[in-house]
Amino acid sequence: MISIRCCSLLVVPLLALGSLAGCSGTSLPEMANVSGVILLDGKPLEDVEVVFVPVPSTGGQPSPEATAFSDPEGRFRPQTMIEGASHDAVVLGTHRVVLRDLKTIADSAPDPKQEYAGETTGRPRKSRFSPVFAASHTSPLPAVTIGRGPQELVLKLDSRTKTGIAAVTPASGGS
Image 1 (cartoon, helix red, strand yellow):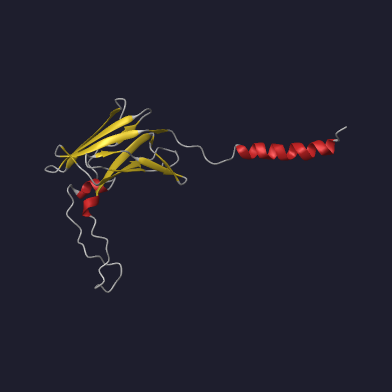
Image 2: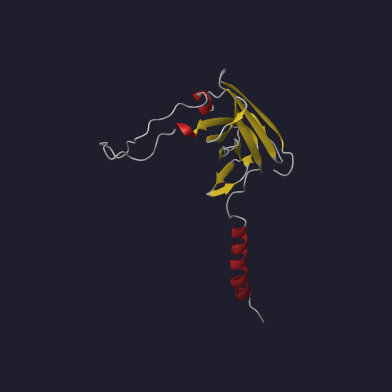
C-alpha cells in the first residue's frame, strides 16, 4: 500500500514541473512576412538599410523594430530580433519606415598614420537620397500598417522633390 507521504513526494515535483512548462518565456507578438522593393527615381536602390520603427499604441507594450538590407534589385525582407532569435517577419501594427544609405559609410580600415586607432582612411560619401529619410520624425514616407498575412511594400523615392511614397499590398503568392 502506498502511503500519502510517498504520493506527495511524487506529485509535488510533477506539479512543479508542469507549472514551469507554462513559464518558458514571453509569447511572440503577432507578425507577418513582409517583402519589398525600394526605388529611387524609378530605379532599384541597393545597399539601403530599411528599418520598420513601430508607432507606439496607447497603453500597449513597445514592439521591436524590424530591419532589412536591399539587394542589387532593390529587394528586401525584414527580420525582427526577439529575445536573441531572428524572425523573418514584422510585428503587426503601424510603423514609420527609416532608410539609411549604406554606401555613405566611410572605408572602415584604420589608417596606420593616424594618431588615433579609430580614425579611418575613407571619407563618407554623399547620400544617394535625402538624409530626411534617416529618422522616423523627419521621414516624408507615410506610416505603413502591417496586417495579417504576407505583405509586399513598395517604397518610391524622388531625388528631385526629396519625397517618397510607400504602398503596402497583400503578397501575390510565390515570392
